[in-house]
Image (cartoon, rainbow, N blue to C red; front, side, top):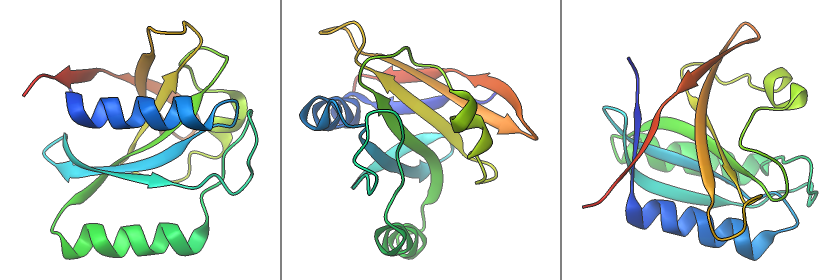
Length: 136
């Protein structure tokens, strides 16, 4: 079974970004190899909304080029839910168009206890993907 492994320091960077940008949804890209995240790309939410995110296309293309030139794989697309649970919304499922990636949601709903969950979306069907925070 697929599992996404996120090192503690990257999880902390994601959480810091989510808290800093709240109440707007934060977003980013996670790259690595063999389901282990090695690099976090903090992205701008062009929509600047608390219930939706959209990455800036130019920034997204630059990140994909960097991932390829670093011999990494695009493992996950992440965004935060500042006030709602770590689950995919109907809109998240509808917009999950990138194949073979994990969609990671970091929820700040519980204040100092952020919740992180991963999902794959296959033709509208949501599949849970375990997310492990590894202490290196």
